[in-house]
Length: 448
Image 1 (tube, rainbow, N blue to C red):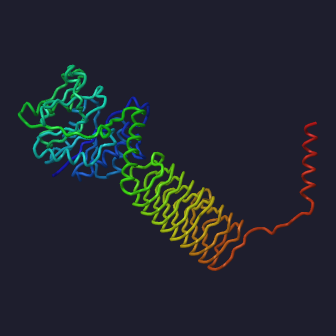
Image 2: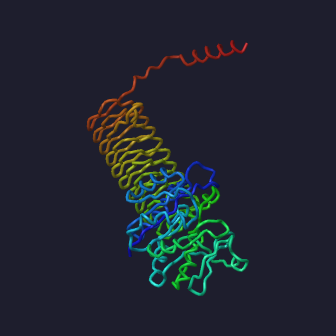
Image 3: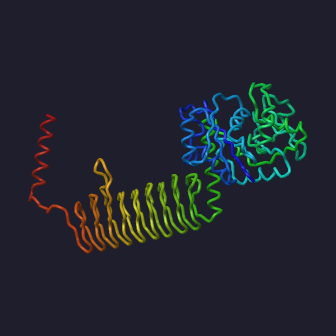
């Protein structure tokens, strides 16, 4: 089946109280628009059309960063959902296939739901996604007769009997491109809002004797975000769903309600994720790894057998090979740690390569930034870096080399060598008592 997506993303989102276009507000670390695009991508669409308006340039840049092949059309004035979809008419003039209409402010729709929607087009000309609402409120209603969808009525135009119907309209629709744009040519703005409703195509299709149908999905999938409160609700729903999926996939979480996932977090079976772990975008944790409490990971890869944390931070570019140990209050950035390497306490490793089985002592810092440029640190296999070592990059410490505690290393250390870079200790007999007495007398004089 040839499929084209039309994703509506033109709204300003006045209730968000933000300069940022509504569809660019984030859920689980990604703009809502990206969630919609990713859900639709599961259908392997031939074309993806984004209908943008407010914040056109920002919306376009975000969409193209996700999919360089996406097409953007502009809706200058917003005259209703039917008018918005019609903006894609010219772009799809040569398209022979199925069109699915999605919304850039609905981040929770699932790919399997869209697959079910398109499957119904084998027996129906137009298919609509609906949901049974706990509180139908001001949703449009789907008026059905058995399996047949007769019409969609907006709340403002509904009779009391129609408002009593609990099957609500999500706005998501599927039909052939030719039929959809043909039906859109017939709709008008003769309604309470004076807008061109996409929903009116159902009445037009039924009037032609065509079969229309509705499938049902969970209400949370259709949650449209129009305010900060609804954005919070969407985040909550996403996290609840993702935590349940993680547990079903064989991931252990002693307190799942405290774990925060990103939209693209990948975790292998038998991994252990402890309390209050936060995953930013771009994290993969392989099977059998353990992420301990209060750790924060972003843009990082954690291989099998690794232990990270507690209170560790992995920043973008952190690459941990198998059985690496990262301990409490350790930060890793843009660095590769080979198999069995250890950084257990209170250290910063940035722009570095740490060899297999190397041990990095507490308080070690790779001094990677000179105020203008970043520089690399290379530490060889089985090297031992003493506690409180400053490694002033660019620098190389060879295989089996060692640095003495408290050293400031500014030159390369050859393999097997011990580097000591600290001044000789000089004890001044009785000087501490004399100095303290002098300081106390000076303080007393100032107080008098």
